[in-house]
Image: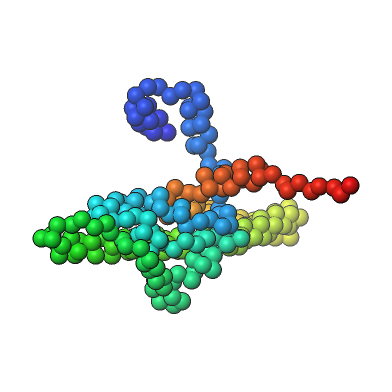
Length: 252
């Protein structure tokens, strides 16, 4: 904690303000629910264009004199990534072949991808370079959508596992409490009580490990989406608040 604080002060070039210190102290304690484990429904695929790898690929295309808008329209699927329950949408799942997982999306090229103007002597070399950059761009897009699909699939599985482990902990807790009562009444020996306590401890450990995997997966999803989904959710909420209800005029 002290090392992180020193590194942050070095980066800022000044001591932390009281407000930053307070927020940093709050961030140290990771309470339950601090990291969301489910995603909102209807997240647009446009979020992925914030990813550094997609940005870099688009800059390389731009360096090859490409029309980025046409390239996105051709190779970038415009879909909803999540369904109503925050799991992978049917549109996202439909991008991959069942079983093999190969990419199914076909480019929709309706506009020229590159501007003209190359010198005649450079046409062959420029054409090869353009094809290379297009292939790289398409591969980066495929990987981005695959990262999201894998992350959503893993999150759904881990959410189910956490619920199962929670039920196991609750059952073990009840068994331990009953064993304690039976020991006090002289029905069971102390070894039985220790055994139920060992089972409770094991269930708690499994729950902690599964929660850790769940939170690491949601962090990877945050990265796969190019920086999370909070801005989109907040913007959607603001639009819902300011959208005026249609006035209903009463007949005279």
